[in-house]
Length: 281
Image (cartoon, rainbow, N blue to C red; front, side, top):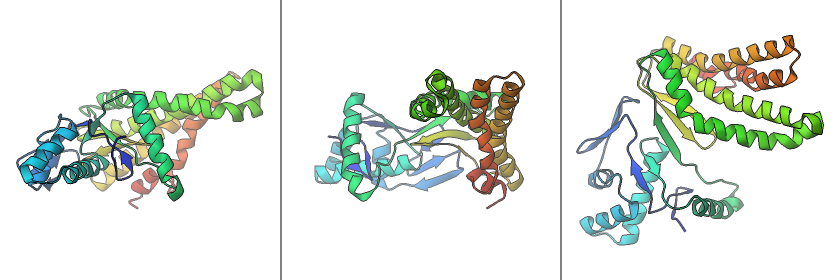
């Protein structure tokens, strides 16, 4: 079974990579997206200079170089990588069969069940091209494409039983698919709306469990508010257009498709992180 560190599963056969925007010097790790850098000790530099190598090989080299017990070196490597991954400073490159990784995740879930906790998700960071508004939108939709597809599939499957009760067997497919696809499209449009207002600002798309968000360089208060509002506003505008279009042509499936997007209006209030950011809270 893969070792468990920090409540998540990281296999020693996994590798790591520095995402675009993150660079390593002799003694510092820099992130141009955040506009920050952090000092590294000898062990941290040693580990990151071997990015691309399996973590068990890195741990063996670390044990030999610093005269550490193998188990201690392995735990230190995994804990360090887990910490950096949780900060979106390294990406985990998984190895092994997906079914095996799923089994490891389920095993950890069962062990954490008595505490009421779930395994900490692996963070994935993807580069965005914010050279122009169009490139920002396109690169965001491309980077979030797999996430959108996964949300559409999962949401549709979850919504099938409720829509079967509400709409009856004949309308189950349209209701479930409409709500599921609308939910997924809303996520993509929301992040694309943010990206459209980040022209020229170093940015990245971060996926962590159920969360999808943009990481970007610090902004002036006025522009930060504009970026915060533009995300949910893009989804709401598309949702309202679909609702009105469906109502005008008496197409309930189009109305249903637009409802999850229109619900992003809640993010424009202080109930949502974007609304709080826009208000400087």
